[in-house]
Length: 254
Image 1 (cartoon, rainbow, N blue to C red):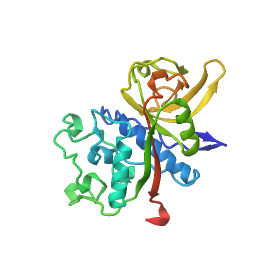
Image 2: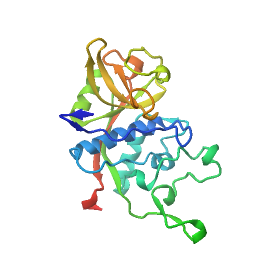
Image 3: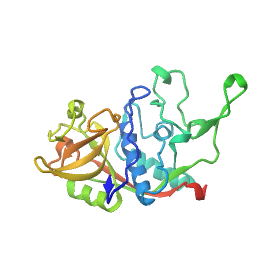
Image 4: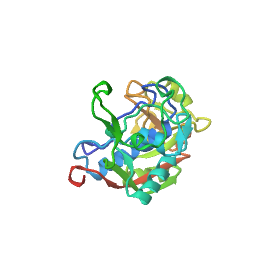
């Protein structure tokens, strides 16, 4: 994330609050896309954070019970082309860890379909004072101009170097007991999605990927894990996706 003293990574996230939700596939993609927007802005200005909940409500690419590595980018690209509008910003649609089939906790009995209120919304005041929540016709958003899939350490490094972080599948089981250092487990199969933001070299463990998870900053190395590079450790080098940011809302164009 650090290049010449400038941080190009956006915030770390926790997919498991306010309650458990298996939305890693959306978090990994959204975080990498937000990073690429930050890179496009040369690290200037307030970070643009994108709404994972918008994908859960409208994307038809997965749910709190899982999804695909490239599904989020396919969906954002499709709506970008069809409507000229992309994924909403976090401040218009905060993450609630619910999707249409969710029936537990705060999700139970609520509408998680793609209504205007579930795309982007605001609320006027307290309900007892006559307040209502309504969907926004115009809202800050980010589009995707292009997306694709890659695999293999060389292709991953080339893409990250050229355009920024990517989202990748990974075997999560070894991560359950990870506390720090370079993870070298071979892994069994992909069952989780993360964002790969760069790479480095450890004098003892050798080259490694810098990987941001979506389990909060209390986990791992402040929300990150280093994974051995070039050996397909944890199956990290098998399924990756990238997206090129299109138009995104800033103060001067809204």
